[in-house]
Length: 388
Image 1: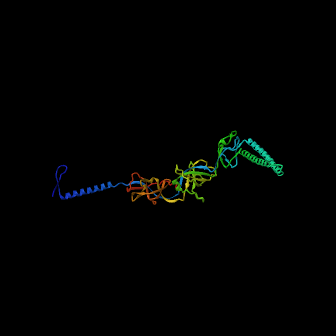
Image 2: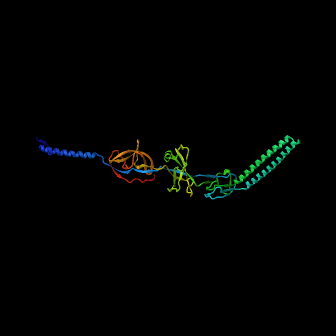
Image 3: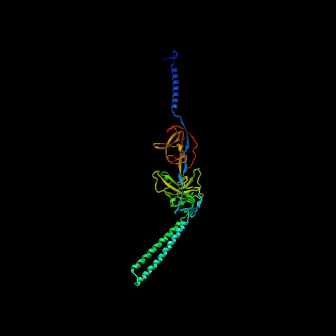
């Protein structure tokens, strides 16, 4: 049997059956090779990604807050009597002791008032003595029928009146002496005094306002608002009496750390509704006077004893409507792991559920990555541990 094959030149050639078999074999081989190439073209290429192993780390229940230093005691010094200011007995900003004189008001008018009150008391005492004698005489005369009941009653009333005048005079003398004592204004507490608001020669009195302010310096309070979530994290809701309340340390604006630590000693009884925070207070020693009333500081509150938790870099975290998840590498493919996240730990996030540790978590090459996609994983340098 012969078949005709028309070449491009138009001439005819005869092909025998063996020739046809050879042609068919060559054509089949060509088609098979083309199929393999097509299959290779349809297989997606592996995506290069960077991975970090999920770590097990002891996580301390701690949190940072912005706090303000407050003096335990704060006193505004005011004049309690009116007079000319004779002396200012302190230097602005110096440390003062309890009972130390601070201001001295002109004493002469108040000394005169004391003497005047003393004279009035002596007159009242004399009048009382006379009233007692007159009452006794009236009673004697009444016994001999030489007097009358009306006269006796009048003398008794006069004696009572004299006793009242004496009591009033004694009170006036005491008031004058107290006012005289107010001419020397002393410090009611030990601490540091601010600058004086008045100078010598001015008239001061109860209406003059604050003359100076004193704040105690050791120990000091630090107060800071805590959100409801952080409040539960550090478990500061109760302040035990055994000294195991949360530990507190401070960091100043320049980044330096205060060398003394304190403990939480007060939690407010209600939540501030406008900010949904609760006010917490800690007490810290201040022997060197580094803490200044009103200063802003960073407050690090140490919560309960740390627990070992899985942590992954925050850069690996992805979220959708179902929650948070990460990609891990399993058998050369990207696999989704749904996780339950906890607190932040520096550049890491705590994983409460979903990972057991040592999984190769993808942190680079996440853009456009799909579940099940083949990946070419390369380890990358993990972020620094930072603060737990």
